Length: 113
Length: 116
Image 1: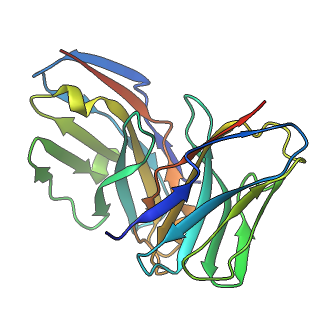
Image 2: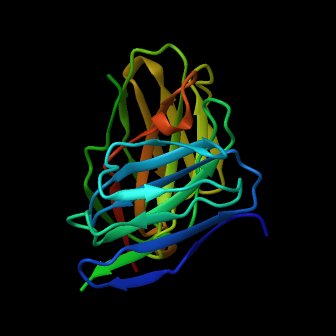
């Protein structure tokens, strides 16, 4: 089935550690995104990429890093510089053309212990 | 400036009741897209509908219907004969037509609870 796969679903991290969330899509979409959602809140854009080997900061990029070495993959690293990393992270993708629908993965819960 | 307002933070109804979720938007663009997404307890955002600003025809899909009115800048979502499985958070969203999808703006969401 075509879709967006995020892993792991649940992740626990000790303070001071970096952690990488995986996102893979087989929809042949050019654009990929990472959003953060805090409990009871809306979505905030962390990073996005419209083409391989290129990405841009979103509204809350500090403390995060990404790479886009392959069209299908857009991993997100939550670094120790991110002061409040406990949240729900959603990966998404879309066709690159304007106005296209964004499709989301199942999300990853990150908890800092 | 673009903005999406979902004034209803939480709604609770009894199963089989009809329920309408409100969405009001602000934009200076003449062409844009509006969306609705459903977020069940599992967390994934599920795409429900995309509507182009030029198409004001109402849409019906099974028990779901959408009422788009440019005159009032509203894109409301109605669930007829609600079911427990409809319990979720619903997000309305807006993106200008000539912008990257990264410019999509989400409302704060409406939490819908359907009681058996």
